[in-house]
Amino acid sequence: MAENAAIKVRDLVVGFGDQTVLDHLSLDVREAEILGVVGASGSGKSVLLRTIIGLLPKRHGTIEVLGVNLDHANEQERRALERRWGVLFQQGALFSSLTVRQNVQFPMRENLKLSQRLLDEMALAKLEMVGLTPQDADKFPSELSGGMTKRVALARALALDPEIVFLDEPTSGLDPISAGDFDELIRTLQQTLEITVFMVTHDLESLYTACDRVAVLADGKVVAEGPIPTMLESEHPWVKNYFQGKRGGMLAERQLNA
Amino acid sequence: MGEHLLTSKLKGERLELAAGGSWTAPNANELESLVDSVAGDALKVKTVSIDMAGVREFDTFGAWLLERLTRQWTGSGRETVVVGLPEHDLGLLEEMQTVNRAPPAPPSRDNPIVAALVSVGRAGAGFGRDLILFADMLGAVGVAAARVLVRPHEFRFTSMVHQLDRVAWQAVPIILLITFLIGGIIAQQGIFHFRKFGAEMYAVDLVGILILREIGVLIVAIMVAGRSGSSYTAELGSMKMREEIDALRTMGFDPIEVLVLPRILVLVIALPILTFLGCMAALYGGGLVAWLYGGMSPDIYISRLMEAISLTHFQVGMIKAPFMGLVIGIVACAEGLQVKGSAESLGLKTTASVVKSIFLVIVLDGLFAIFFASIGM
Image (tube, rainbow over all chains, first blue to last red; front, side, top):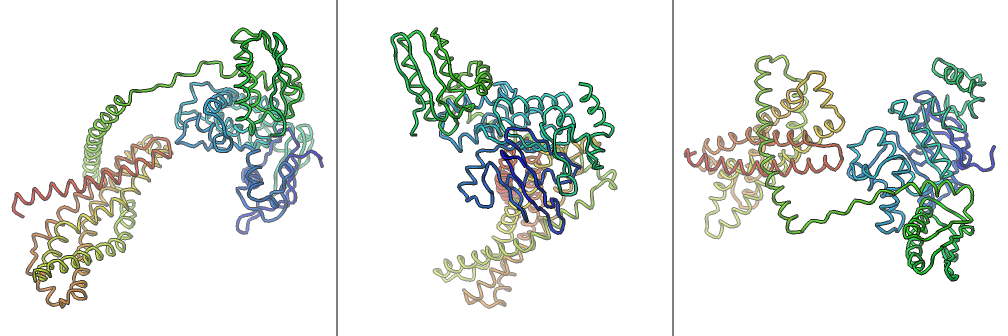
């Protein structure tokens, strides 16, 4: 397995009650790559993401993020590590009582000592980087459209210049054009900021346009891992169905012709 | 910091800056003051060069501060060159060159006196708006009730039973406990103070009349406003936030008829029942204290009570109860439907609902006192 892994998951078991969702799962995310995690609904993609960032308890296995083993990290090391990653939640999870600007400034204000001027400038810079205008900065989350909410949430996830960004279904609920724009945005930002991206998605298009590698989750394990061509060759029934089914097949053809 | 983030050297007409260390978020504060202090150094020179070769780490914070510096100097006509930046960081700097181009909006600063007057005016207008809002809700509920009277099968009977369980049945223990304690306290205070005049027997009059006419219904109404009014507001408010109310409306249901009417009716039914139970518990508590603390046997307490109170006192208290329920329900539902998108607004409206309904309950009690006095009850 790769030496320079930003996230190393080994033998991970996660379950609720007597139901096991992730069953001895191992996965590497390399530095400065975009890894797309796909799988059927309920296959545990979001569970994997939430376990890595520490929102769900695991039963067995180790998780190492940026060289830090989460089991051995004390409170302080954990906090330090949490500052080095950003998370984009599925529904945005913006703080509804703060304006867009304050939402983006929140992690900066809590973790860094910055002057108000620099805070304002950085917040606007981040917002412009994700394609929003300064006029949007003083809106409240309830006044934003779905696409804008995702962009603000991304700006907030990027607020501290993290090394890893976790995206939970970044393009769900967006129209195909906005979703395409968002994929492109993620790609550009990943290249300029040189971040590692762990992206849980349903969106085939995202896998083709944004991701370097894809990991497919089924039966609590990673059943296929690699770039798109590897996926197309996979013999696993779900993978085959997904990438070469009606919708996947069209994209696969386009990929081959391109 | 062991490393020098930024050092400056003046060479005749030329200012040479050398950057080093980590130009990243944790150092941003220090960097900003350094950048601000060298900004003035360039006043005397024509050209500036910034050597970034010594920088180990570079992120958007560092890139923006560098951009801010060069933008300031180029803006005042100085030639500024950035050298030695690694290839892979150039993209970041280029990205930064495009941001923050729009001039920041000037902060609006109001005259404090004007601002104070504005807030007083707003509060006054808000009070008037509230009254209109409550009248509007009362009217809407009235219309919905009339519609339901014409077509009784459309009434949400199940919903009402469910609410009745929550608002009335589950409230019984706490209401009994509180009113029991209040009755005991009134009796104790009455006996304690009347004893100085040797008029302990009149403490029973005090307990009986006060509880049946005023305290019983008031305590119960305040408890219900805090307990059920707040939950009505929070329920309707979060349904509003999640567009459930809009969904009902688009399916052709009237939210007032489906959600509000059963809730308000339940309060109108529950309050008299709870008031009755509360009054009995308070009289019981008063009797117990009179016996244990005042040494008045239960027989004497009961016979004294029968002399002191009449049916009128009981009626005065009970007549008020349904109206109090109506007021609490109207305020709670009207405030709930006013909730906007944010979590903060839900909290604000729930607070407002409880404060306003308690206030209105007390005002209503005062109006009833005047009314009953003038009709001689």
